[in-house]
Amino acid sequence: MLQRMNAMSQPIKKSVNVRLLSTIQHPDVAAETFDIQTTGELTIKGAQPYIVYEETQNEKAIKTTVKLSNDSALILRSGGVKMRLPFVKGELQNGSYDSGYGSMMITTNTKQLNFENGHFRVEYELLINEEIAGTYTLELIYTEAN
Image 1 (spheres, rainbow, N blue to C red):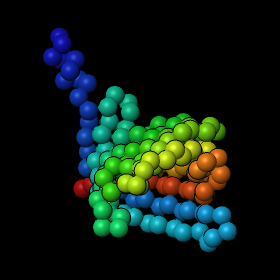
Image 2 (cartoon, rainbow, N blue to C red; image 1 turned 90 degrees about the vertical axis):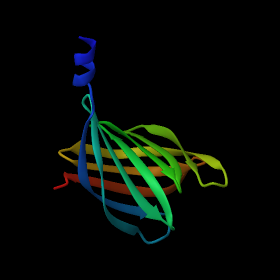
Image 3 (cartoon, helix red, strand yellow; image 1 turned 45 degrees about the vertical axis):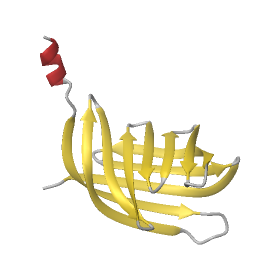
Image 4 (cartoon, one colour; image 1 turned 180 degrees about the horizontal axis):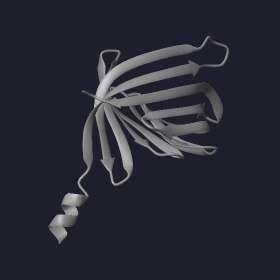
């Protein structure tokens, strides 16, 4: 029976096309918008979906893992950038950012968070030393790859 339970609890993995739309509004500066399209992998462990994809920034490879749910999310980045960004709607959450020159604590203040049918959207303020460093909107849309 133990073997059968393990087989049933194996994660489901699917190749997906990933589109990231992000807008960054720093104080007193025009908003920046980024539109990135890549491929990744959707893993479902139990009822928990995770998206994993890689991107390149400043010629450095960055692996990003996004843990998604209806009321919270967690973005983990490793490689050229190390970052932990937690989101809980309506709450301040502590995360971290490591630039390679040192690590700093950062805080997210999640204003809106929605996730359904392969479409994740979060609006948040990023705080450093209790001051707003910027207001961010991130949309992650994934569809099964053919």
